[in-house]
Length: 80
Image (cartoon, rainbow, N blue to C red; front, side):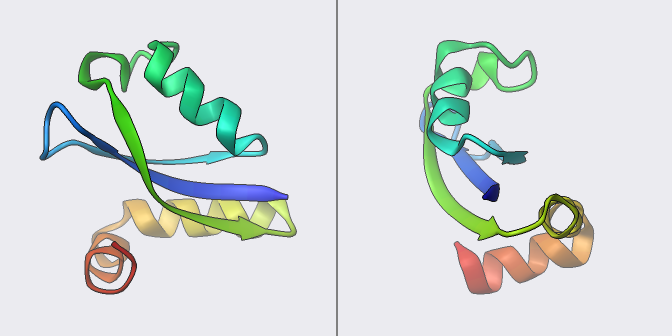
């Protein structure tokens, strides 16, 4: 499976991150361990949403959408 996820910083309430992974639990652990330079300063992270997709293409498309202005509005209204 291919996962699109959103994590929320517990230390900095205004910080969120949308990403993609094939190993969701490991990816969240990596974020909390500081292995991603974009998310390391805002640890710890909490998983607030994930969606599973059968194809990588669909997952990548949804990730790009959630990072767009209309995707952010959709996410805040319908997903989290």
